[in-house]
Image 1: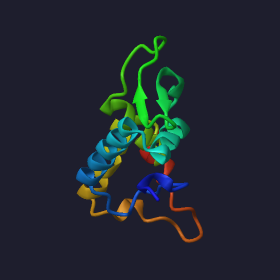
Image 2: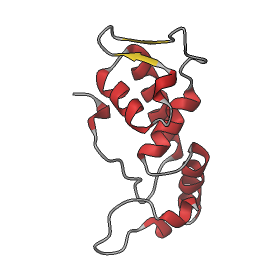
Image 3: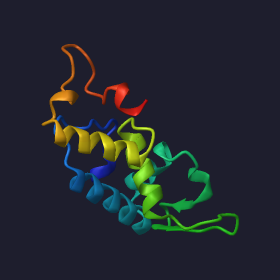
Image 4: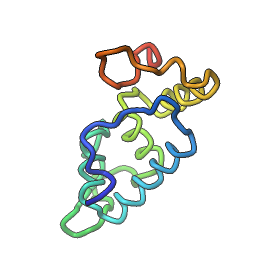
Length: 123
């Protein structure tokens, strides 16, 4: 079972920016390696997964003749940010930095609420 089998990701109360960066790099490596669950996650969250030929059967992620760019770190970062319900990687980074600056107090969810990032971080 892979790290990428989670259905929903939730930003911790005190997110670690370095850990988020490592997660994006791990996702990129796993997609390039052909990890089926990583490819599935990338397809689920990236807004334009059809730009890339993601072939888990052949255990490879490569370009087709129609594709205009290889899979880059920025693509993995975007997919990861969207999996955390953030609209972009910079907004996810901003939320993590703000949380670190304020000791995580602003990201504590209200009782009975889902553990998602409050929408005001991304508006």
